[in-house]
Picture 1 (cartoon, protein in one colour):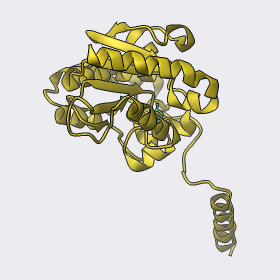
Picture 2 (cartoon, helix red, strand yellow):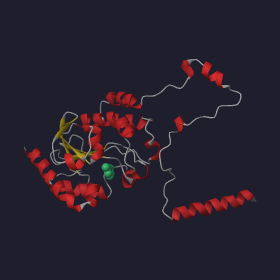
Picture 3 (cartoon, helix red, strand yellow):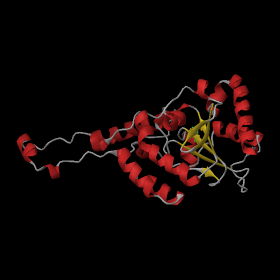
Picture 4 (cartoon, helix red, strand yellow):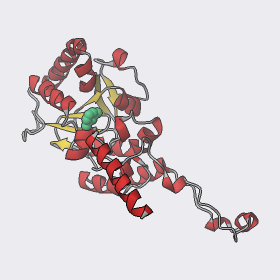
Length: 260
Ligand code: URA
């Protein structure tokens, strides 16, 4: 009787949460379940573990090293996507619905790099499809670029520093960015654009080792062996309309580079 009651109580609670808009059974922060302490069986004494040969103790994994090895082995964008999908060391993977690799035309002269998928990108499996993405499309259209263009001179290629949505759209941690950086660098090399556009602080921090977008936007720098232009992120422009003026100046900068 007790368990039937608790079934209906649990069910009512769940329905109430769905009505309130809960749509994901996620915790606030990623949990590395591999790192959780496994309770030691009573029969296994501490000294047995200490006496165990080193070979049977769990080895420390250097996730960045593993990422670099997997990224460098990728000879094509398809290989790279497969290597990233198989990479198990980033906890974000376990909380995301989709692996969001890229959109647009590989080989385009311009490659846009954002931060990480948001909710809509996680659902669609494509970068920059939400409100910020729609603004990005308008900004690109203003200088004759289009992610669905076939001709490489007006095409763009779009990706993010991270391919998995952080829970609650949290800003990616430096550890997550550093772990996934080898894949981003390989992604750029394989897509081989003439110019990079770094949208906001996260790609600047990952690729240039510095943030402070208000100071560094609009100045050409170098990343992964090619010119890169830091710009305000479209999500920031949605909140701070006045900054669109600087974003427009940066777009014209990019346009003149493409012509030059
Ligand atoms: N913001 C980003 O940085 N990337 C996306 O794909 C969507 C929103």
